Length: 137
Image (cartoon, rainbow, N blue to C red; front, top):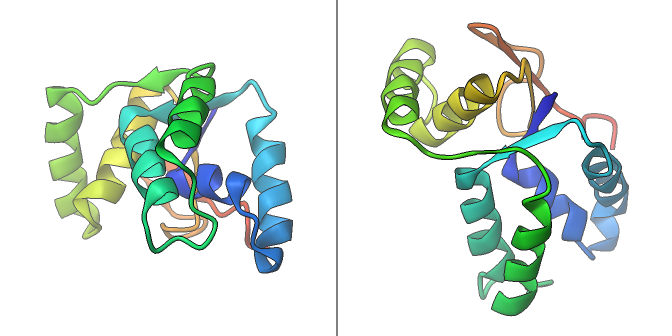
């Protein structure tokens, strides 16, 4: 199972013609049954998809309906254990807490790969490797 970062979900709903290749790739990823998410990813998706400055902004109802459909995937809850682990990962790798929390949620779900364009493509974070699925888009 692979873990999808928030940008995968956001590209999946993009209507920007410049992001059409990324949107197609994101929807291909989400058609897989072997994807894990976290409560953090769902929160970030909802906030970013409905923000007023987004040109292809969703209504709150549309975003909530999508979050509900994303619940078909395994979802890692945010726990105290993940928070503590994320703090240690943040320090160890000098990354943001939020990126560290993504890595730790993936680890808790048993995912060895995080699909993200926000972290270093190919880097291994103590057994969780990052792949940028949009590198060729």
